[in-house]
Amino acid sequence: MYFKRIRDMREDADLTQAQVAEYLGIAQTVYSRYERGFQTIPLGLLINLANYYDVSLDYLTGRTENKQINH
Image 1 (cartoon, rainbow, N blue to C red):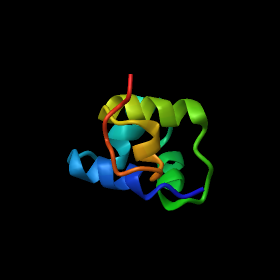
Image 2 (cartoon, rainbow, N blue to C red):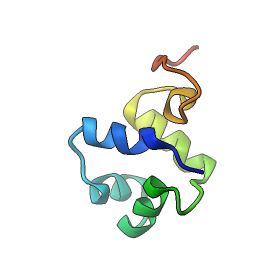
Image 3 (tube, helix red, strand yellow):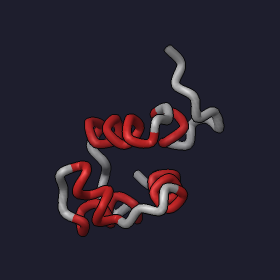
Image 4 (cartoon, one colour):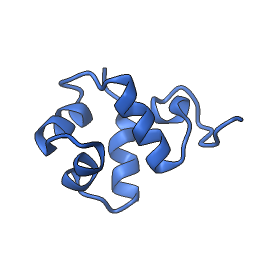
């Protein structure tokens, strides 16, 4: 599944794929496949990305335009 926002969020934060991959504890090549939709992102990594960017999973996956996390 392709989630365009993971690339957008990374670029907006002026981060490289290597930097995000290091945060997630994965290889840059694996992260690149996630961004391009060639490999499914495990839920745990999606949660880590949402936490890292301080956005909701729904926003990160494109289900909403609201970045806020509802508590």
